[in-house]
Amino acid sequence: MERSLAVDNVTRVQEFVLLGLSTRPEVRDVLFAIFLTLYLLTLLENSLTVLLVCRHSELHKPMYFFLGNLSCLEMCYVSVTTPSLLAGLRTGPCRVPFTACMTQLFLFISLICTECSLLASMAYDRYVAVCRPLHYPLLMRPQVCLGLAVASWLGGLLVSVIKTACIASLSYCGPNVLNHFFCDVSPLLSLSCTHVALTELVDFISAIVILCGTLLVALASYSAIGVSVLRMPSAAARRKAFSTCASHLVVVGIFYSAALFIYCRPSCIRSMDLNKVLSVIYTVATPVCNPVIYCLRNREVHVALRRTLHWS
Image 1 (tube, rainbow, N blue to C red):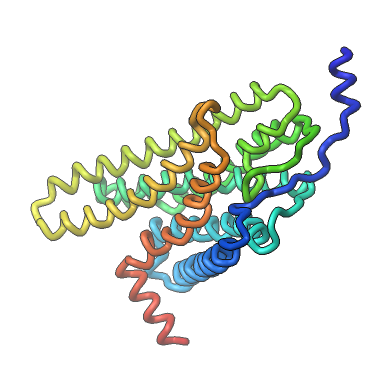
Image 2 (image 1 turned 90 degrees about the vertical axis):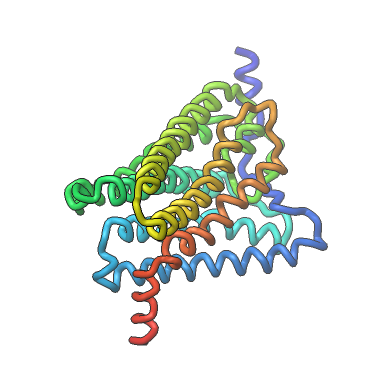
């Protein structure tokens, strides 16, 4: 009882201080220019992808429907984390109100969970296209595609509500310095002055279910594709299919490797500096690469892009 009263009498943290990606002034300006360029390039690439998918009827197919969803998500995704990264590089450690921090956390968790589901849906779409082509119009009809996309977005929101509510309900009595460039789960839990075992368990289980579950779907889909490709009689067809699958797997592998290492490892090997480096991979690097890997290397997209440039 006395301990409870003592905790209640402690002043609650009203704001957090984000240290940012780097506290070294000599490298901050260079990093700011690099990440600002990557941010603008990400917005340009994904905006162009959405424009092409919406504007050209030949791209009104399940694969491009999911790519359009992914591009919309990537623009939201980088706009949640990158501005605070840029602010930290430009001005140094910055103060973030408690409510703003929890809002950023909610959006980030929602979007990363949605991205996992969309990547799994895209892998399943390619599996059906390659391994069950005769059933493709039925299995990937518009209602199914819409259902997968809606489930991805709503599932991400639901998971985010639960995780953010757990983290926001904790008490933060000080210190209030987050060794990160945005409000993420691990640094927030490390600052809590109350028992966090239950919250850590919820975070760990949800990470395992979402990240590992969707990763298994993606790996199973691409493995089945690989087996089917090996049975193709044409060497040229095999090379083309393997090239496409390999590039997709690179993006999926990088994204999931970084995310799994951060959110599914034991707390005894946590390192906030390592967290920041790995976070850059899936919050900055993969959103830049995804349009190139999934879309801009595609022949149908190239044709649509040339037609758009010709019209303009």
